[in-house]
Image (cartoon, rainbow, N blue to C red; front, side, top):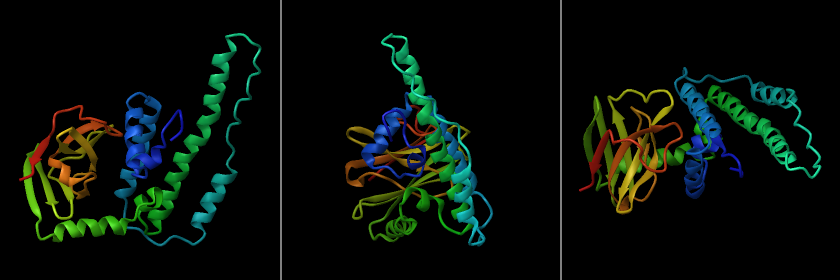
Length: 248
């Protein structure tokens, strides 16, 4: 994230720290361009996730792709406009700076998407490659919650389906799932929330039919909820919950 824009790739793939993620979410509320980037990359990720089973690619595929990206021409950045001391020069300088920074940021998204394609074809996990998080670590945490001796499984009606919360107080972790619920409309996401005494706290995004390991500390939560939010998510819920479960 820089002073002007967030990193859409790291945001969508959960590659930011908690503080940076919160700051990025706040930034999205006021930046239409970043919202477009986040929505575009989220759509790329969803498309890749639904593709056919991976097959082994030729060893040269990744190298050739990156080499092609490296030699592809880009528009030259506008030259800085020399200041003449007039107030009218300031907006021109600012516009030049914004245009100069725009190409690398767009290419960052496209390059990451291309790398994700290579990794998916090679049999790897896109999320692990882009965000740096270990898929095995997440899978292990999910398994620990599923096997916890104090596991609670709670459910609530969610539109045409069911919201399921699987929680372990000893581990301080919870899983959240939507079953029988259709995918969110284009430009929207299902966002999970930990319900705390200070209000709802974002706990990540939920894809119907898939278990999601919730972010946040279960010890400070008395329940969980899911809302539908604009792509990229919200700092606080902006719509009524489609389902809520209270911890016993």
